Image (cartoon, rainbow, N blue to C red; front, top):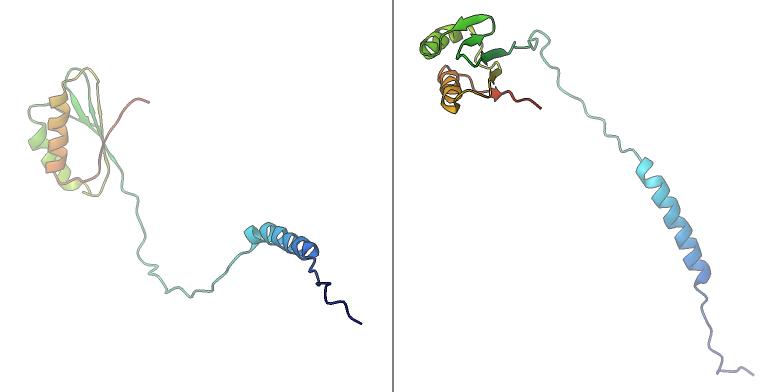
Length: 129
């Protein structure tokens, strides 16, 4: 009759081979899958155009002469003159301060304070490099 001593064995090697092939296929295909979601965006206003605000360049040479764009100013009267000059400028403009490295740190900071007091928020100090 039947031999109850024999136990059935499950050979899982082909199953592992199939799973590894499926894993490799998934790993190769997965980066190329693009998920696309259709979104209807609201209509924007076409009448308002973004305008590029020209930057303000301030240059301080070693003799303490200050040049704002093309206008020259003296250091001791710069704070008052720049506040008057800044009234006709857009306060959202970027201000770039270029100063000679031989200048005293306090001179550059006083020019920076005048720019901040005039209402400018985006101020950069230019460096070489």
